[in-house]
Amino acid sequence: MSFSANLRLSNNLDGATIAYVAISSRPVQGIRPLIHRKLAFPIAAAFALLLLLPVPGRASSLDLPYSDPEEILLAQRAISDTAAASAPIAESTAMPPRVALAAQESRKSAGKAFLMNLAVPGAGHLYAGHKRGFVHLGLEGIAWAAYIHYHDLGKTKEREYQTYADGHWDYNVWKSTEQANGTYDPGADSLILYFRDNNRQQYYEDIGKINTYWSGWDSQDNRNFYRGIRAHSNNFLKDAHHAVVGAFVNRIVSAVDILRVMKARSNALLGEDTHVRFKMRTKPFARDNAFGVEITKRL
Image 1 (spheres, rainbow, N blue to C red):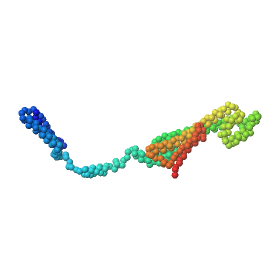
Image 2 (cartoon, one colour; image 1 turned 90 degrees about the horizontal axis):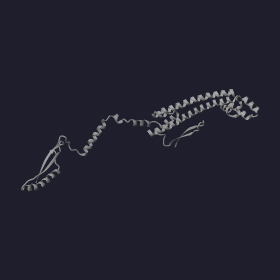
Image 3 (cartoon, rainbow, N blue to C red; image 1 turned 45 degrees about the horizontal axis):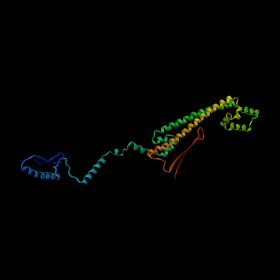
Image 4 (cartoon, rainbow, N blue to C red; image 1 turned 135 degrees about the vertical axis):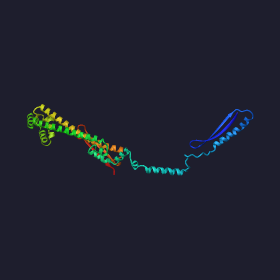
């Protein structure tokens, strides 16, 4: 068997030189195979060593001249400066919509928005650019409209039961009846006269509520009818009072909400040394409810 090796050099599309080595074998006879067998391995080793050595390639039109690293860095910086100088100014200074909104909110005063909502619920939200302020404004309008409505109904019924009491309860009848029955009380007499001249609301309440003055009514049916009218008046006035309470609750809720919203979106608050505390005292169906705001600042 004989071995043969061929070396072929060629250039690819990039201009680099590629060396090909082909080794083939075929059967032979006589002494020539021994000679070829002795020379095949040295020739193959020589070609392998040739492949390991750098082979100079032929220059191509696409090849660039050699440049050291410093020249490459200077060229890159020059390209970057040219691109930055050619960029439009408007594009470099433009901000995304969310960033612009946050910047606008950061210029708003949280303390001012808080006080505006205490004065007019929703005004602070609109000042800060939040449309939920219209909700608080609507609730405020509904609350005061309800107050006016129920207050007018209560006062109308109040005038009605007062007129009815004046026509069906008589002081002189009550006094003479009590004296005739032997149950006359001078203290009750002086008290009802004092209320009649100084506290009309208490006067109309006592003549229909306290048993001592029942004998002044011309009939118990009229007394019961009077008490029904007075109960309607009190219910309407209570509803008006509840509407006022709702209006003040709306103020407090809107004031606290604007602080929460502005803190979450623009990280603005009254300050680390300033604290806001809300106080509320309420009793169901009572008129001594109270709401308060306490602002403390550490100096």
